[in-house]
Image (cartoon, rainbow, N blue to C red; front, top):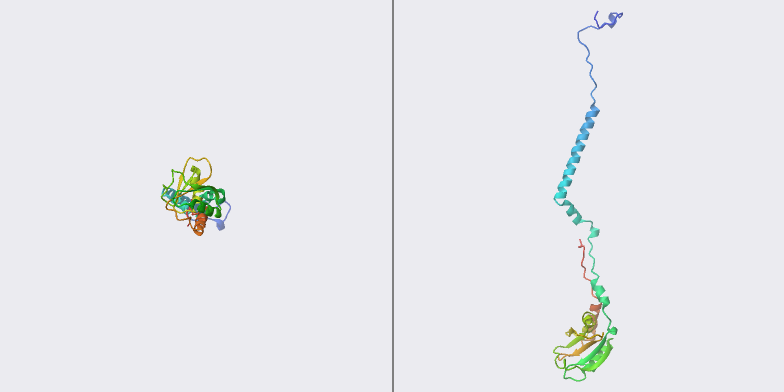
Length: 213
């Protein structure tokens, strides 16, 4: 009887042979699978981080920001033209003194009457002083205080094409129209009205802080 046979047991339970069963711990496959998945995830995270760093150092973020959504690519018109036009005075707010610096008599009165019909206020009418008499070679000379050069004189200038505008030392808001030797008459009313409309209601030019796509 083998030594492995418990006492009191017969042959029915006798263990024979010289080989013993080997006891092994069951393999923990779950842990292996978890470790493999964790390794793959870690490698993926490292790869994504590397791509982000490359994108930062190569300026990829700036390109994306420059592209932006289409909603940002909208041109905005500059309001400066409309604002300056709104500040210009109307003909009825401008008082014009008309002086004749030519040898032809009656031009001052005739010109003043026409300007009055076109909505301007009329002040003094007469011959030019010695300073300008027969010394204005062009169609005319427009005179006013410094602020009038960008305000009243451009409006009056729409009525006499080619007239020179100049500032002097006056204090008042009235302006002078000195008729020159090249004067043939005021600009035709239709053309003058068109020039005045273009001056007081200019078409805004789109200037965008953001370019259109």
